[in-house]
Length: 214
Image (cartoon, rainbow, N blue to C red; front, side, top):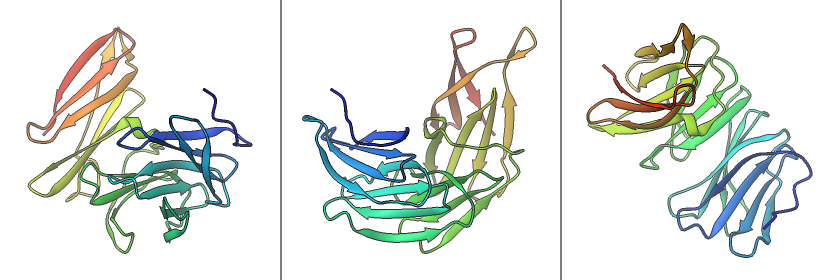
């Protein structure tokens, strides 16, 4: 099956929780909603004025969250295609994603800042800096966990693991794995907040690593 319709490269594509809908984000500045079984385009959202860098369903599949290089993040009504909320981050946005309990939104920028927002984009709860020009654009490399109502998340980039807690605006720790003097290509699999354990996979030596984070 081929989902045809975008007029420029697609940067992000996600299923909803029931795998009945697909949403895609493209450099053509639009978001498209697709029927997963038929491949038909259900609706087109004229989402942004620059490439759309990420899009995601809410837990109940009624809302979409989109971000763009235009610095705007938006919440959309899936059924009406109406924009529910628009917030100007004032920086080019690499991604926006719901945290695992769908109560917060993490925004990553193409500068040295990440922002944690409440679910309706009315308040920026925390700003995270100090990750050495780390441009985060791959949501698959961000993992969230919740412990005692505090959010923690980890990011893997260029062989290094960065770990944040909401209470601190810089990363808590940075670790690296090397093999024969070379940094390994790491892929983040999951983060367990109760035990503060991070699991990564390395395609360089086909190993799975468990990281104990402070």
